[in-house]
Image 1: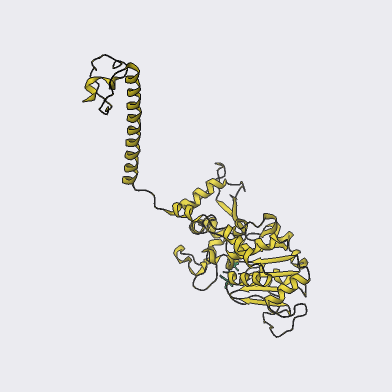
Image 2: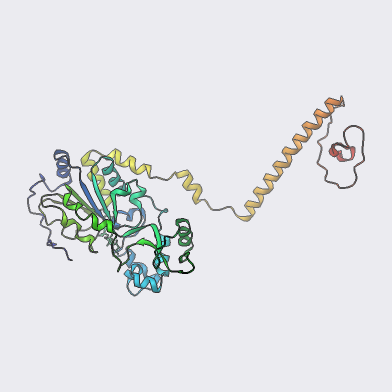
Length: 375
Ligand code: APR
């Protein structure tokens, strides 16, 4: 199903709802019309500043950089028939993309801010990186139209595969197989591959864009159906804001479409500024900042073998010193108790196995008190 709307951007058309086709006019509209049913439709462009490449950007996109996987078509890496034949390219990529290594962007935090303000009806994402969840957007507000790495299962018997085992396999770059020996099928994250149906949650939510009172499209080329058809499901007269490097789909063809062309993070900052939410947005983003000290320690190089040996020797030496001090203090207490003169020498622990001559006093009880052990 192609884009029914003309892809022509009619910027000359006068808006019918907004005062102007600007983000300031959208902010005014939100406040004056008590907008509280915002729908977002996003793609990989909101995660690129986190370090996750998008798919189709000419030089930096994944599809331009999968040559190392020797694929005929770059999209094969997400094709279910190809995966059955050869899962290795996908798992080589999964190792790079697996959640846990990336911090949510300002754009993800903007979605969380809309939720915090009670304005978020639904967040439709094509992304599989779970960064919206990591930014704190509740799961029931998110439609992961192309699935995510959050869960995984056998593609034959559909048995779920344990998360911890999956993490180990992905990090080791190994292909996981079903734990049922009768099955031993390939395990795949619950990501929607080309040739697979979208989750029912997507189809069950297709009426929501029609209920929205504002639509924000961010960081997507709208290249893949049926997701690409979502923006045109918005009711006529409902403003649609595009925050994207480039014009895409039919965005701009309606009188109340607003184009914020450029970087997503800069675009949401502009939007937050128009709403007077700048500080709240920056504070939300700061909350996603892993502790710099911990991060530094985490990334610190592991100690070498020699460093570990030196550490062990230092630890043992201090243990022995401590024991000796205790022994000296104890010996003095015994001498005081017996009214004997103070010992002027530090006792060294004797490990000699020869019979220790018994001597007066407590030597028969505390060998280190014996005269020869004081040499
Ligand atoms: N700021 C703004 N726009 C950006 C940024 C950024 N920092 N980075 C990238 N973009 C834009 C690109 O210009 C492009 O228009 O985001 C869009 C990303 O498009 P794609 O790479 O095609 O990603 P996406 O739209 O998410 O792809 C859809 O295709 O291969 C399938 O399943 C895959 O979900 C994916 C789907």
